[in-house]
Amino acid sequence: AAALEEVLSLRLVDVLVTSAATLAAAYLVFFARWVPGWESSAVTYTVIALGPPVWRALTRRYPHRKVFEFIASFWLLPSVIAAHFAMEPLVDALHPRLLDPVLARADLRIFGVHPSIVLGERAGPVLTEILLICYYSYFVGPVALAVLLYFRGESAQYDEYALALCFFFISNFILYAAVPAIGPRYYMATMFPEPLRGLWLTPYLDAMMRTTVFARDCFPSGHTGVTLTMLTFAWRYRRPFFWVLLPIGSGLIFGTLVGRFHYGIDLLCAVPLVVACVSTAALIARYRGETRAPVPRPARTFRRPART
Image (cartoon, rainbow, N blue to C red; front, side, top):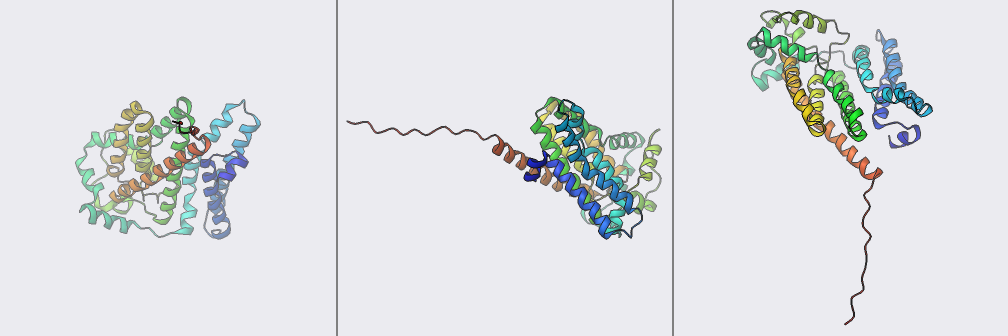
């Protein structure tokens, strides 16, 4: 990664995005051509992989046009969205079996109940609507914090934040493929006494999530993990913004259960993954800061002992 950064002027996030997307495209081309839709999925991952070197090359070629640098720095966001939409053939080839029974049994062993059923029964129409609106603010908070760090903070803070998000998204997508699940809204549909009850927007918000291209994205909860990552960096670098994001992020996390999108185990397992990704990004940022900007040590002086 360090060699690619030096030769191609790529950031570590660029190297990770390009490498992960290249592996996904290569697997589809060489091992998954029997899966319907593999062609479009492979093309999507190829475009994602080519994005960082292309945009960084344009940045070097036209340094006065800041738009290229901005797109290169924020390439992770469209890459994540496109990669998620293209995961269906990849998961079909890697692990087509659903593991919802395992996750549902894990909830019963840990909590003694199904959290989505219990919380859904206790949340009234007003709270359900608020939590679903918070749930759909998934990208709003993380992008707002990224823009704030990019334009008003030091570049090192933004790079560390983007690196932590990149680590989490890649790990999250790998686990989606390893533990595919469709969630309580489908697997436990007959156990809910009635559809989600809200005020005005709840039926539309619930229906929107039923038309997604890729639905086997439960374990672990990406909404929970990204929100916790966002709150961690907001607390560290933009404390006033943290207090703005905290109620929205908390509502988003609870909305994953009330909205019947996730099992309780999905949220629990997202926490150690966030800790690992944030810690790794912090260690890399500290190492890179020490190697690129070493602190000069004072020169030692030796004095001869005074003669008496």
